[in-house]
Image 1 (cartoon, rainbow, N blue to C red):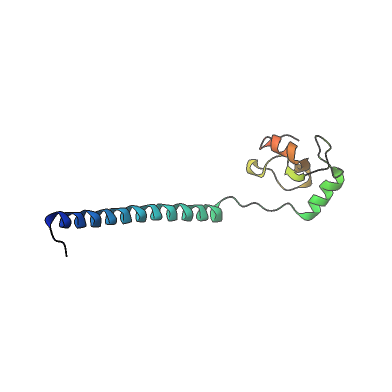
Image 2: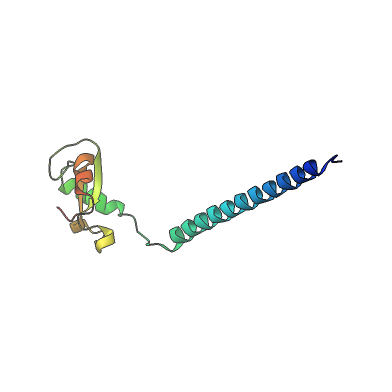
Length: 113
């Protein structure tokens, strides 16, 4: 039991601080959960993207000679959409090419064959 008014005040102040800290932690936790739930919902309802069919990949590989179209490299190759899917491009053979990692990174989302 507290022995003085000062000790009573200290107990009250420490209790209030603990409560405020707990409320702040709870508010931060609620915000974090809301952000995670929003991200999950976006992932579920966001744009859907079909994978490039294997037969198209094989046709493009044969057409492009298994090499990067712009530079001819045969290392770190990627299958790339000429017109990005986000800009209306499809998965057909005419819209797919082989790029090396360097050329693909330089391209970003520009429409460059």
